[in-house]
Structure formats: C-alpha cells, structure tokens
Amino acid sequence: MPEGEESVDTAAVTLPRAAEAAALHRVARRRKPDPNGQRKERVDARYSIDEKKDILRMARSLNIAGAHYVGAVVMAHVHGDLALPGQRTPLDDYIDELTALRGEVAKIGHNINQIAKKLNSGGHPHPGDTTALAQTERALTTVGATIRHIATAANQAVAKKAAR
Image 1 (spheres, rainbow, N blue to C red):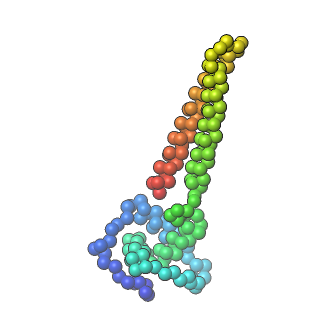
Image 2: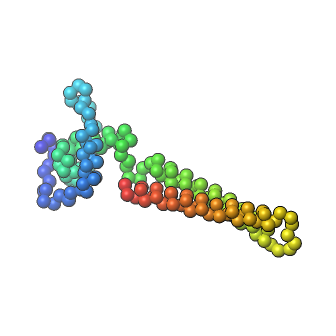
Image 3: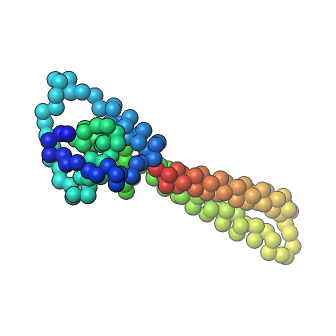
C-alpha cells in the first residue's frame, strides 16, 4: 500500500455501477507515464476523513493507487474529459440556446395571433382577408409545431444532462 494511505474495511464497500467503474478505469488507465520515468512535481490536497476513504475505496475498486486515481481524475478534467458538479458544459449552453429560441418563436406566434384576431374582428372583410387569414393559420400551425420540436429537443438535452 502506498505511503500515507490507510486501509478501508472492504466489507462496507459499495461497488459503483459497472459503466461508471469502467469509465473511471479507462480514465485512470489513460494516464500516460512521465517521459522521465517518474513524476517529480507534487501538489498537496487536503481531504476530510470520509473523502479520503471514498477516494481510496474507488481506487481499490479500480485496482490502482489512490494517488494515481486522484491524478488521473484531475488530468481528465484538465483535458476536458470530466466535468465537475455544477460546472457549465456545452450541453448547458445548448439548453439555454433552445430556451431562448423557443421564446423568440413564441413571440412570432403571439404576433400571428394578433394578426388573426384583427382579421377575424368582424366588420366588412377587405379583399384578400380570407387568403391572409388562411396564410396566418398555416403560419400559426408551423410556429406551434416548431415550439413543440424545440421543447422536445430541450427536454431531451435536460434528460441527457440529468443522466450524467
């Protein structure tokens, strides 16, 4: 066991899901050796007793040293392979863009509704009102479908983010 690492009761170890363990194992194994044969620089970090136990438990489940596990996870994050909890990702930007787009398309639908209301307000119809009303109805149907598609895409993106 590496210096400074304490043993953890393995009977109390809760194993991670297979896919999560495989992904972490891949990340840890991707860490390439130092070209000089060893790592010489050191970064100190402090952990609570429970955090350290969790780190060591996960490292053991991957059959690697705790320091190797911490280094691999940190370097994976540095290289963009892992996101920290609460960190914005491109998926967050995509969800925000979809939300903004939905709002803009909804404004178009509101304007089309105002046009339809004006055309249906009674009185004597002008030449072309029937054609304009039919086009307005088609445009409003298209806007409604577009908003539903945008909402579906946003919901799928949110579900994908929640699954991470």
